[in-house]
Figure 1: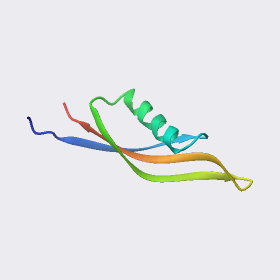
Figure 2: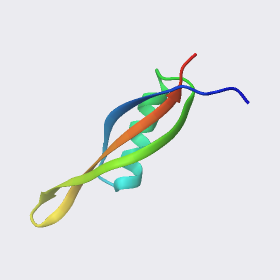
Figure 3: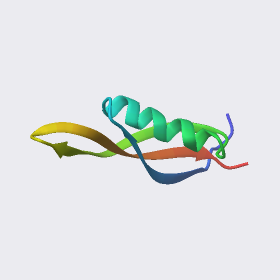
Length: 68
């Protein structure tokens, strides 16, 4: 098996429907321009409140991908 070298980027996805969808939105957008994605790591989860209720989720993810 060949040695792998990875690069990591950090991005933030958002969703009014929950943290999983926020992370999925971030990864889907990254997949439009980044190839060879291999893993992700949730770094931070936060949200916006409105009238004492959760209105929107934001999830910061690091995405690792192999270099060509």
